[in-house]
Figure: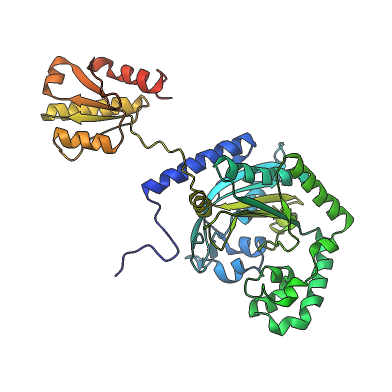
Length: 430
């Protein structure tokens, strides 16, 4: 039996996990500045949440969900995306009744989609997402896009392209839908099986087809922008005005559609234009979804959000040769030589330093002194504390600053405070 990770999944090893942690911490700081609060939802939901929330006509629901029956015969699904789960939590926990509106949420979550694995697209994927529920102000659309763009820019990315479109309100979409059906119906038999089904279920999704994208009918398909009513036009103009005020560059692309049924009005994608990034250039995508909360049993509540793939974020950083400022050095390493008494004293000291906020490690391989110093070097330790029989008898410890090579003796009873001053400025553990 081959004991390998399942197809479409990867192990995130410590050397890579440090990059994830740095990016997550940066994003949390940005979300705090934008006054978003974290939400955590279950890994699986009742299947109906995604059938109703994402849409029966989507590829996700039709082809990509990991769905199973539990022992009670209930149909459950590993979450394939984040918005429907957050919307369900919003309704169930009556967050629409909170005094502070709109409700601004963010999440880090693992998603599961059964699709063909390729670079940057896995069956178990990691996503950062935000949702704003309770406001139909176009300024909120611009704020959500601003948060996404700020995230990429503060992580150092420069080769970015923001593409936006309007899918219009219910009336605009209905008129556009009829025009699409009339346009594609004469070519129906020339389209792939998926598009033939989409034409009756959700014709807007035909425009997003990868199989038929070069079909001549695609190039002459009616644009949604031709069918926007005055209210939808005004809304889209305001979104663009706010983005311009924020000095955020964008391109209006009438062919941009999103793969989920719940979108209306603003839709957007952020893409990487870095050389060598790959064929799939999308880094993040989202849009407005007024009506989703009602679909899940809640009151009429407008919403907007986006999802950002973490794997693709790290790919983009690599494509632009951006090295995150990771600090992998160790505060101090204890070299302990001698009897069991020395080992016990070293173990006690490790504990005391850690509870005082100092990062510390010691040898657990019974190495000689030379081997322990080599380990300290591999860990890029700032200080090495040398403890032996003589040091214990004299109640001191040798402290070597590795960068300068300076070595001094410190009374054992003072070592914690000394290192707190050197490493933490006297603050200690908080």
